Image (spheres, rainbow, N blue to C red):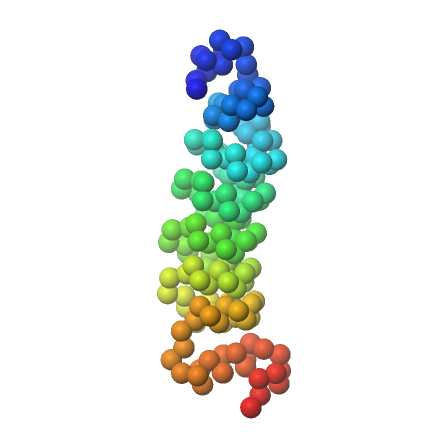
Length: 158
């Protein structure tokens, strides 16, 4: 679809979108793209080079739209992970800061981290004890100690 086609059909890009021609979103003004993406964040996949504002609107509405954004900025990545730590899975080579944000938001994000630091592991378990399943421990004593220090006082005492 191109602008010539829309002109012949006497449609504006937003009118074409409203009639079901999703590809017309790419030709819309940023204001119209923002309006559409805010209502339906998955439509971002039909915009070839969305502005950072449009990307932010999409991940604010639904963090997992991060997977449909080519080369998201650090700000877009951060926004997605702040809203859902599990969105970290769509970031190739996330910074340690983003990894910490992810596990603090949702401890189960630990499963998507390659070589998490001890701090990341502990933060994940503090947020959700079920994150323990994604940690390999050298000994049961190490496991006991880590769980004991993350739980309520006295809950895991011998």
